[in-house]
Image (cartoon, rainbow, N blue to C red; front, top):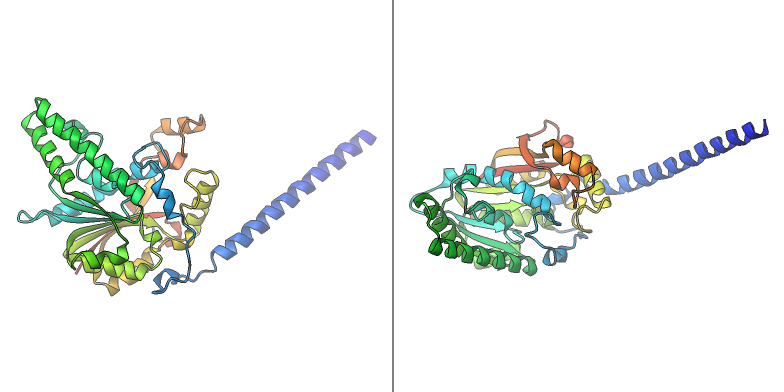
Amino acid sequence: MSSSFCVSSTFSLFRLSLWLICLAVTLSFLSTFSNLFKAPKSSRLNQHATYQTFQDLQLYNSIDWHDENGEVSVIHHMNEVRVAFIEAYLVRRQDSTRIPRILDLGCGSGIASLELIGANAGMLHQNDIHRSVRKMHITCVDIANGALEQGRAKSNLLLDLITTTLANSSLSQQDSTRLQTIKYNLQHLSFLEISVYDLLQTHAPNSFDLIIASNVLNYFENLPLAVETIANLLDKGGYMYYDGFTRNYLSWLLISFVQFMEWVPARTFDWHMFVRPSELDVLFEENHLTTLELKNIVPTMWPLWSVVQFLHGSLKGGFIARLPYMLVERAKFEGLEFMYAGISEKR
């Protein structure tokens, strides 16, 4: 009986301890949760920066941007979806009398731009390319000089590779034409260290046919001024491509989990800086921009081997970063969104 009593007491003590731990975790979560959501819904529409982000922009100087299995692997995995979305509208803007002028805001090392101009892993093999390559002039801008230097080095390396291939290889007319086009694009790909707020000091209004703002909106402390600048730089009838994380309960939970698992570098994201599509609607209307299409970006849960590899711990950098992504129709309720991508046109 004494033994039974000890077992019963031990079990009760264990249950009590477990309950107290759960209570402490719940209270801690609710406290953090309430603090995070005290910001007003219109906070990103404020013309004056009232919230100083803790995001560390200097970390982008030191990471290896072109390691597809490294710290920015998720950007590489989203590239195909982003570029296909951009391409669909770039074709509409194509004018035989003028080569498209493109601005890549917050470009990092120009990963998206290199993909857009055709300078990707499959550039030497026609069968690896699912789209045509056209001439374009791209200006990549960022405030992280270290990232820009990586972009310059990568583009110069690719340019040397193409030049050597064209000189020494027996290529088909189709492959030769394609590589000549990519070479032209690399020669007209520039990297500029400058803030979005200063671009009108170096570029005239209506200077670009397409402006790419990929995963950069959440870094603009003065979002209204950034959108106003983008609208001024965009030519009439030009397109703005944008994507990013929306600010809701789901994004807070997922980003918190990803950062807790250390799948992204510390201080990469600040939930308060995420931008809701409804906030962009207000800013677009004020700046003569019309949203043509807005979709959600979601990870695809296939192929199955990705799940198997993840379970065996072989997916360095996190499961979410390793999944392929796709575009789906926008959720009816904003609370169900996490990432979005859209195209707007200047009226």
